[in-house]
Length: 76
Image 1 (cartoon, one colour):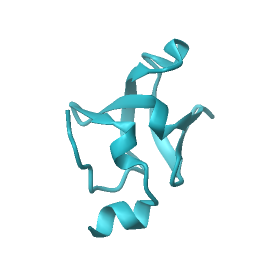
Image 2 (cartoon, one colour):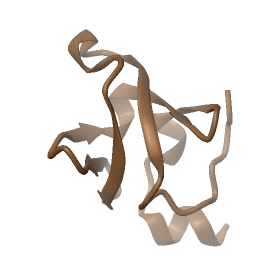
Image 3 (cartoon, rainbow, N blue to C red):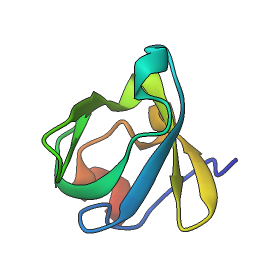
């Protein structure tokens, strides 16, 4: 599991691998928008970062570790 993702998320293809809401597991899509607490996929799904783990580029990322404003996460 990746502890600190410092790259841009918009444009990345993801798959939800774990979630508090089990109906989200397995959903795939491309990230088209990102806020501090959410990611929005090209299929219209709005997902809370704090509730999911996602696969990005064959790496699993805990959503809580990317729960920052994009510009704050990237610059550190």
